[in-house]
Length: 509
Image (tube, rainbow, N blue to C red; front, side):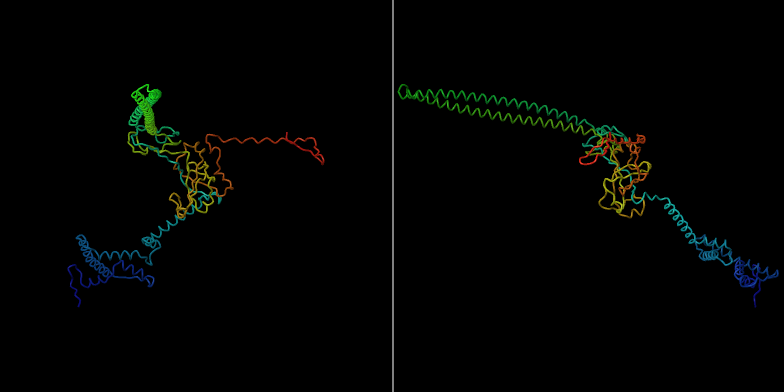
């Protein structure tokens, strides 16, 4: 038998069982919707007692569920987990997101939008559509150039840069120019400190004076030695005269001795005197040679003194050259780009002071593929269009074409061009034109260089160089008057050629 004893909450066991078996209202509604297509809808009637019993059963079923939820919440606060409830919630949410047969079209769209893969597909489609639109706009606005007879490459204006550097180590005394100043060749740009060099110059000049004095003394010694030679030669002549006198006496003494007029002693004395005179002559001749050697020595000393003078003068010239190198001039006409140091700084030999740009040597490097670079000739004409002056083409000449190909650098804009092997080509701007545009020429300006692959094809109107482009100060020239018509031929008297009929000949007056 069933136990119908009432519980503490006022329900019986049978009522609890009925409440447990009774489905939830939402579930009943979904089941009715699912089965609505397969079964007829029939009205369900219930008496008041049945409805009250169902209500009481639902309340009884909710209370344990509320207690379980409260217990789960407390457990979460104490650091526990909600695995069971979370799984139920996720499954319920997933089931709610699924498209049901009875959902409306709007509800189906909303549920589809909740799918992350659908969102990603929509974003990818939008990006693809934007890319297609950009590609179509690029193709519609892309400049196709001037035909197959012309080729172009982008680049930047470049100019020859020169570093104005010191030759000697020292301190910068003065910098006379600023960045951006235009200077002429030979203009002094900076000056080094000259105190040490001026002291060295004074010492070198003193050495020159001393060497010149030594040279004068050596030259005086030559005169002295030459006088000694003269004196020695006079002595030789004197001794030679004495020798001749003693010889004549000896000859007389010999005759007298043979006759017995003089004694033998006197003859011996005369003979000894003659020998002594002969020895004196030899001695005098030796003195001449000594004096002549003294002259040669004095001349050598004089040459050494002269060399010392030249060496001292060379030292002076060297110091003067160093002083001249301490004044740093502009090597060419151009513009100062950078001041690398300031006055008062000490630099080593070769230290950079200024960076100088030669505006008369301006060129642009650009790249062309092999099929176009092979048709570009050295010395051929080119046109440079700068982004700053697109309406003024600059005339240029091709001065260099690389002999070997290379990978295109990053300065070429398109990726398809960077994947090719290209040849570097150099186009140099006309020097005469640059003199008229010195204030406008700025290295680094981007632009495009156009070259003619067919030398017989005329330049397009946009690339024709006009007089105003060559010289902005000269206005466009007026059309010149047509040349005068040639003078008409005036008839002259007929001339009868030899053996023929007369003919009329016209000559211009």
